[in-house]
Amino acid sequence: MNATINLEQHFPVLLKELVSIISPLYGGTFIDCTFGAGGYSKRILENKSNKIVALDRDNSVNDIAAKFKSNYKKRFEFYNRKFSEIGEIKKKDIKAIIFDLGYSLNQISNLNRGLSFKSKGKLDMRMGLNDFSCDEVISNMSQQNLFKIFKYFGDEKYAKPISKEIIKLRKNKKIKTENLVEIIENIKTKKSGKNNSTKVFQALRIFVNKEITELINGLINAYNILPVGGLIAVVTFHSIEDKIVKFFFKEYSEVKNSSRYLPQSILSKKYFNLIIKKPIIPSSNEIKINPPSRSAKLRFAYKSNNGCDFKNFVNNFNYLINIENLKFNV
Image (cartoon, rainbow, N blue to C red):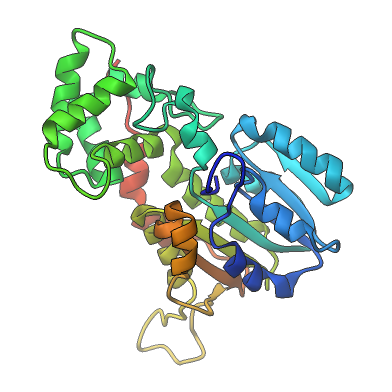
């Protein structure tokens, strides 16, 4: 799910920065949780002492993965699976686990998938291994639940009138991508820097693909299979993702005394070593060459101890998980 320049030349975001972080760990297995066009994997495999285990829920990348397998033989493995299932991948000598949470231009540009507001026809938005499509959400979800999805996953100021208009229109016709865009445009008459449909489409993509649950479970399971000293690196593209990743690393990289009355020796463990607290962002030159990279943030941390239960992490984002678990009315 890498951001790209065009359909011919893939351009993984923050590649140079990521490589500089993981290169001291070279000589082992790296897990690429979002294989996409293989940009990160290809660069890592340039070092012949490295191996890649790649995952992607999108089966449209299977042909790319097959070419990698042909070129790199035993140094490359691919699984058409969600990265939340990373715990089932049993490998020794894992040096780093990498997540790139952006959608590729290939995916957005494939208008049949309905991921973009430029698409026509049926609303789909499925990235693979899904339980339902966007069409089912728009056709069956209550106005109140649509409002919650738009508000919390898109930070959409006009979530209420948009959700109301969807309910009104669907009584008489099937809402297609262009109909949804028209609803939004009619309500959001003021133009901003972004396309008016951006937030609603983001919210629907998150809900259809359960991206919040996937990320939370993916991070926890990555920690569980990673040896002490290994690294987790995550590239995010919107504020919800970054908020989750930031909390994950920060919450468990600080030693906290369970009580101010206890002696200094009785402190909770520190589970991550956070070298840099602020995110790494693209250079102005990268943004100029590849504008989709402008919202990217790279955070990373090294595992310093085993045994974390992550209760605080899950509890802190339960309100988002609950929204992803909202049911249809019919």
